[in-house]
Image (tube, rainbow, N blue to C red):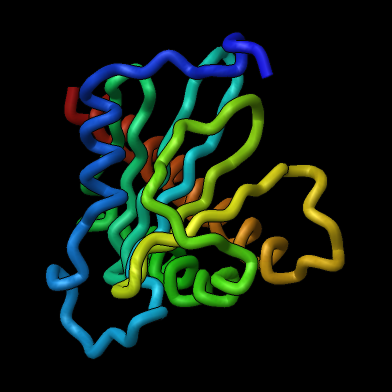
Length: 170
């Protein structure tokens, strides 16, 4: 693939994405087994050379980090629907483990591919999604794709509510 498929990224984006991918399990309470998923990081290419990394954890935290250095964080502290959607994604992401490869390389995606990283006590696992072409023979991928689209949708709703509140408060 040509370099034109690469997304321009800021140092801040690379740093926050790396922190998310290396987030320690001991931050969360619970008796996690080796392959229990406690976090999901999904790199989502968007139009106009925008790359978003959505980070969700088992406690319902969900944040967005953008390749230009922007971010949307903290909404889980205010919006219960977001917490439920993010928790649901992470709680069900384990079904994807058989479709993943263990990795220590966290490359930025090329083209329109979504990178999906699963964080477990036993290491980080990766798979790729090609939205629009997830075959029916891969129900695990279809399910997780739907779940992360729900989280994205909730994050958009939270952003709209925050914007409306900011306008009201002038």
